[in-house]
Image (tube, rainbow, N blue to C red; front, side, top):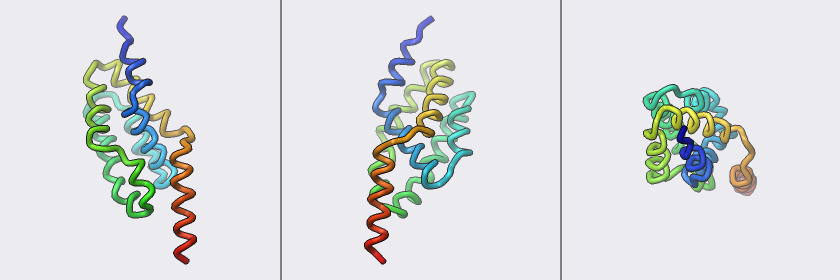
Length: 125
């Protein structure tokens, strides 16, 4: 049984970046439905639909705070993550569950960006 995709997904910088963005969605938008859709995707269509919904909130996050733009996945980042799901059904299942899990972990970059945003808001008063 070929499980090379597990290492590829875990070690992927693109997956890590996307997981960090999903954590920001939880932190700022309480977007549990989107994270659940990605984490429970049973096929590529459900997965990409969840990714699309997550990315639809990027501009809203950026308008809340410029610091958040550093956490929004790039075009290339999204392409690389999506390329991983075409491996096979097991890779899709692992990737979707892994991204869903990453969304619920603590990220120093998300915490720092949030603190920086709060400082800027405090300075605007």
